[in-house]
Image 1 (cartoon, rainbow over the protein chains, first blue to last red):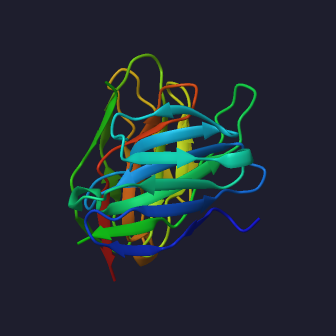
Image 2 (cartoon, rainbow over the protein chains, first blue to last red; image 1 turned 45 degrees about the vertical axis):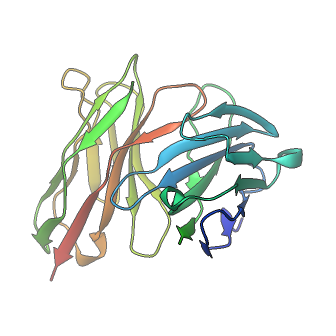
Length: 116
Length: 112
């Protein structure tokens, strides 16, 4: 178990460009979450997958954002036509699910996006 | 909608001092409550949790009690160490999908 990994760790892009981030969850985890964290704030929920199905999207996720989780394994988050307001840390978390218990979410180190 | 409010930082303490970080929440129903910690240069880690009223979560000398009557989940530690310097986030889950709702975070700085 190597934990949740995210790539790249840092991304600098020019306004208007497209960027894609990858998250590799803990292998047996079927739930995967994306959050966004801006400076001085707590993480905000963006979207959630149960296996390969995207079950919920925040209103923060505009139509420029798209996320996928093919085959229920890794996930990608793409931002099209980036804007300066997209600059943030993008966090991925994964967890188990099942039964009536709440399972701990394990967070990756994040991808820091800077839009210039 | 649901929300979490926690005290602003930074909180600066001397080693061995008592730490309290206040957290209050607004939620429909009966949420589960969490404290996460982010050490410098590291990812978010779960510190402790409580899933129902009057539950006490504890870990690494930290404690927090789920108080439904005051909608609070204050974090306490009796004697902090320099290694406790970090940003602490209070959070809740109120849906079945496990979506976390975080407070803004409180930076704690412990000096020798």
